[in-house]
Amino acid sequence: MRIIVGLSGGVDSSVAALLLQQQGYEVQGLFMKNWEEDDTADYCSAAQDVQDAQAVCEQLGILLHRVNFATEYWETVFSQCLQEYEAGRTPNPDVLCNREIKFKVFLEHALRLGGEGIATGHYARIQAGPEGYQLLKALDLEKDQSYFLHLLNQSQLALSQFPLGYLTKPQVRNLARQVGLANFAKKDSTGLCFIGERPFKTFLQQFLPMQPGPIEDEKGKYLGEHQGLMYYTLGQRQGLNIGGRAGSLEQPWYVATKDRERNCLIVVQGRHHPALFKRQVRVTQLHWISNHPPTCPFSCHAKTRYRQPDQPCVLLELTSQRGLIEFVDPQFAVTPGQSLVLYQGEICLGGGIIEETI
Image (cartoon, rainbow, N blue to C red):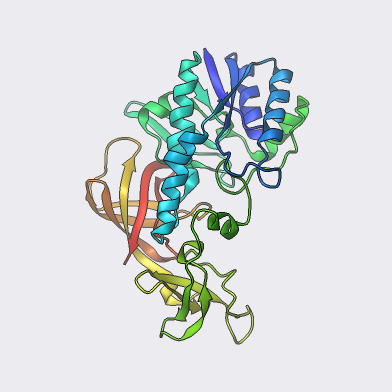
């Protein structure tokens, strides 16, 4: 059985290829290049990454394919993210990237190459059951990436494998070191999906020009000027440039909301200010991995951002792809545009886009 592994040049995808080869699969690698707009050595590591991927393939004795999905990435991921930022919301490009690139155009390309399935270096698990495929959390909860994979459907899960789902990151690096993979200690990639780590505001200004406006407190007092609502997210503390120090009488300021009509950024003082916490959330574009929405009221857990501990909640209303969710405890900085992902134990049920808070 031929499996096409999405090789990024990093240690995770390399060990995924190694494990599948050890299990007897015919493994081939596929390196995706998805960004070219400002492909410079300062930020884009694609040239080094493809060299690392090629070195791994040569060591494992497998073929490496290369493909450029920059057009698809721009049209289906990045342009949509720009629209969300411009509308004052905070999108999650990694979630979109998985749905539109890694498990769509990459999967389709892999099948054209004669692959019978694909694999990636994601930390998650797939389990087949009598009612279809389930997406499970990785055993290493510190690395679990099911949050970013919650939009996958049954056909995508049926053709995908996550070999690292039962391993911890130290185990992955140890395996790479034991077999002599040159990238065993390579730093994990961070930043925007396929774009890399860079100064976010400066990067976004290339596509969304500054739109300065006032910064006010909840009583309307003018505190300073922002450069554009799209450059800020709810709960943000750094980069406001209006003073405030932790541990002092003058508590730090946090972004509480955005008034788009007045182009005004509303801030409050203190991490525990009530304006920063919301109990009810309206979610749109709800996707259920099982294709079977639950009956309301439905008790489960949810994350409103990656690495957040699971929070107990109740799905109160469900109409088509929209839902109303109430948390047991008020949640900090629930941000429109971000993903809310639902869980029942280790099972990822699906999720949707945060539309508004109540």
